Structure formats: structure tokens, C-alpha cells
Amino acid sequence: MTTHEELMNRVDSILPSLSRRALECDDVRQVVPESMEAITKAGLLKVPQPARTGGYEMPQRTQGAIVTALSRACAATGWVYMVMAAHHWCLGTFPEEAQDEVFGSDRDGLVAGTLSWQGDAQLVKGGFRVNGRWQFASGVDHSEWVMLGCSERGSHKPLVHVVIPPNELEIDDTWFTMGLEGSGSKDVVAHDVFVPTHRTIETRHMFGGTSPHAQNHRSNLYKLSAEAMLCMSVSNGILGSAQYGLESFIDRTKTRKTILTGSPKAKHLPTQIRAAEAASEINMADSIQQEVFDAFEKLMASGQRFSVEDRVWAKWQVSYAAELCRRAINRLWGGSGAHAIYSPNALQRAFRNINVGAQHASLDFDSSAEAYGHLLLKADE
Image 1 (spheres, rainbow, N blue to C red):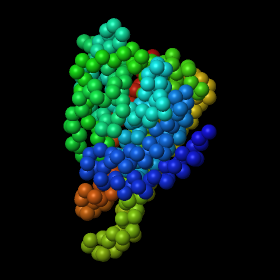
Image 2: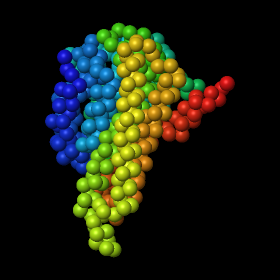
Image 3: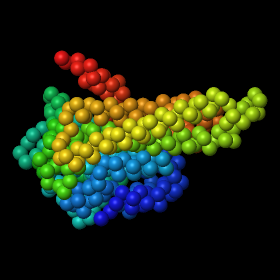
Image 4: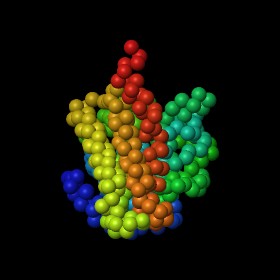
């Protein structure tokens, strides 16, 4: 049986090569084939995959640790792995026929896409007709399948999530951004695509942790809310980039000099304070995420599902963790000097990647804070 320790050893073995190719990923605006091959050969995408289809079906803590580690080496590779792993987890809530179709014959699956319901679906005989445009389909250039959230036509209420082969979709290269360039998060467009019923799941079941198919696995892993799983996954990636940024700041500061006096920058009190605060914020972000993993594992052990209150709490916790990472890297950036503005600079890349990643809709700081504050203050009573 594959263990957490074995998987982290596999991760450690590929990190140097991922790091060497990080700039190349940004240059070509997608994860380079060699890096995608490295993570698939290491079996990392099997971590959230159901055991009934040959996956490892491992706890969210293992998946999160891998996302964080990969993101320290290459933010783009970490991000694409995070997105695909999240979708592979989501497949565990789909009908078994869809799971077998995606992962059968020991296939890797490679499910790209976006979970937000940007396009729409219309119920027809045998399935749905899907139309619309979806942004942020990270890793779509390497995908074998694309998962998309669909709203009800007319009302725009969340309806179903579907899985579609990429050759039935149009890929529109819109991905020109200030950060995470290497994630290749392009738009996809559906023009009246038919999706059979077995490749769909009602959104309310997947996001609420109530899919009937979640009962048919060896563990309770797929009873978790997809919303809670996704926001945690995104926060894990941001943490890895923040750890990389802090390490880069420390390494560079050891050799920097103060312009006016020539004294070592590392002996400069304001610089020391910036480093201390940033390090504590990043460590706190990690601690918060581990607390949420504890709650996930308690859920897995009990077989219960997250209540609405649990979901609000979890989303706020990881949104706040991501915000701590953003604040930390912005503080370090403010004390990094003029040379940090050049594109190859490590801290500048971390600054851009974190500020782009933290914009993810699942980590909306304002709405997450509002929902949790509402809960704390019992505003409905």
C-alpha cells in the first residue's frame, strides 16, 4: 500500500528538475511536457483518485502536502497539479461509469477545467446540451478530459458538473496575465456539446458532500464538500509559493548592501523586522491549514458530512491563510530593492504568482470573512 512518506520521497526526487524548468514554463505559458511527465510518472495524480479505479484514495493532507511542495519548486506545475488533483477527487462523486471511463485501463485521467458554473446546460433525452465559455481552465493543453460547472439555462442557478473530452471543445488562448503564466489557464468554449447522463453529477450533491456515489468507496473521502476541498487545495499552492518567496528573500538579503552606507542589509533593523513578520505569517498560514486538515480527517473517520457551518468555517480559515501569505510576500517585496523588479528575480515571481493565485474565487477574502462573521454573530437570530 502506498504511504504518505513514499509519495513525499517521490516528490522530493523530482523537485530539482521542476525548479530548473520553472522559467521555461512561464516563457511558453504552460507547464512543459517534461514536468507534466514527471508528476504523472511519480503517480501523484493517483493520490485523490478512487481506489476502485486503481487510485490511491489518500487523505487530503497528502494531496495538500504535494501541492505545497511542488509549488515551492515551480508555481505553475504546482497549480496545474492542484487543479487536476481537485478534479480527480471530484470524479469520486460522479457515477461509477464516468470514473471507469476516465481512469479505466490504468489511464492517468488528466482532468483539467473549471468548477465554477460559467456556461449552461439544458436537459435533453439521455443527458445535457452544454453551451458557453469557461475561463481559467488550468492545464487544458495537457488534458484528456475537461470538467466544467454548468448553470441552468435562463436562471443561471448551479445545475450540473460535466466531463467532456477536450476535442469536443474549443480552446481559446486568452492566458496573458501578471502571474502563474505557466499554468496555461486558457478559456474553453462549448458549442452545443452533448454530454451523456453518466458523465454528469448534480452540483448541489458535489458541493454539498451528498453524492450517492460517494458511498461506494473504501473510505469516506468523497463525502467532503467539493467547495471545502477546492479552497483548501488553492491555499496549499499559495503557501508553497510563499515559502519559496521567503527562502529567496533570505538568500538574497545575505549578500545585499545598503546603498547609502554599504552596510549589510541583513543587519538592517527594518529588514530584520520584515523577515520576522513574514516568516511568522507564513508559519501561521501553515498551522491554520493543518487545523483544517484535522477537521477533514475527523470527518473521514466519522463518516459524517460537513454541515453548512463547518463549510463556512473551513473556507474562512483557508482564505485567511492565503491572505497571510499574500501579506507576507507583499511585505518582503516592499523591502526587496530595485533589482527585484526584473522578471527572472525569484521574489518577484513569488510576488506575482501569489497575488494572482490569491484572486481565486474560492478564496474571496471579503465574502468568506462576511460569511464567517455572520455565523459568529448569529446575525440571523
